[in-house]
Image (tube, rainbow over all chains, first blue to last red; front, top):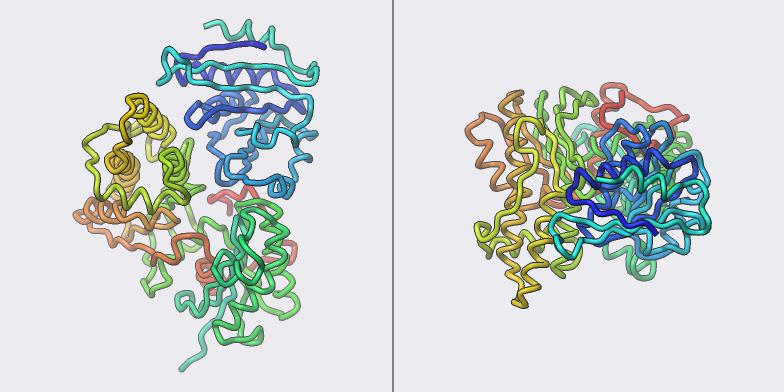
Length: 158
Length: 341
């Protein structure tokens, strides 16, 4: 597990950019953290790292947004979903094994539906400075070989 | 009495299945939404929020009820209008397929309507006359956009949210305060008894660098931080004051950007649309701020602020009049943008 600390939104975005740049086709990123932890900010950075030109906005209501980039970004949000049946209706599996990179906010609500091989990111408000600092815990699940935590660590030395 | 042009509107872009019959783009003969009480009872309990299969189950009963309540039959209709995007593909397809089938079998013209553009037409369901060019602020759970509307189907996006939609932050803050869902009405109500000056929350992008875009994730985080600190002190939350200060911050940004757009483009009308258009403070402050700018300010009737099919039928009427018809290869477009031709 890799722990990264961000002291500002800009740094969170910067970490996101590095994650996006290292992501490969088929990478699924499960993003967790309480309201206001900065999940969408990180997703904005990931999008930039993937070469997405558009502004990434919160998918809480619309449940899913698609952004074209070097690799397409499929941006999901489970915040508003109440049961797994609703989720199955969205036809997520298509995207999990598709041509792009998937970011799922509030993934832990239905983690059973996610592919076993994925990148897990937990965002927490840093106890020392909960207003603006965030601790990011990044780990690989299911022996994901597509992503290098070492490389990410190297890129994220602020 | 002359014959009215009757359009059946169908809307399935998000949570609700809706159908409506509207005459001449403004007279609502019926407006049926599947989340209404009568449907809950008939279809056994709560309709799940997001389920295209549910749309499929209720689409025909909803259409039947819209016709029955309007006192018309399929033979009386002059056209079918349907939302084809943006939204969830599975949900959109149910409406689009139903509309195509009806259009084909009844030999009626088919009109495809952008859901967001549909919201604009909610304003004309009380008989107001459209006067282009106009500016419309659409504020809902999923969208916050400031539009320059030059004609039917001629839209330019002046600004939009760069992160959260306004309605979304209302709901998220309400949940954090334990106020339930939806958050808009209850926050609006509590804010009336609070003092917004007790707390100061940021207004993002208010300088010229933000142009006419919005950003609400900063105010959301600031309010959440404040809630946490208040809780740490172990005192009861000053709910009314928090709601007032939060609502002030969101409404300020919406009103100020709207005023800038009006000053810049000097339209004849300014329209409010979307679920958050029901917010009392927003209505009050907009009217006050725009009053000196010589623009007619129009608000939609409350029942047409949230998603409905009457607004789709109204938009469809104008499209039909100018001959903008869809063909049978019409498809659902989940990522439909406002500036698509």
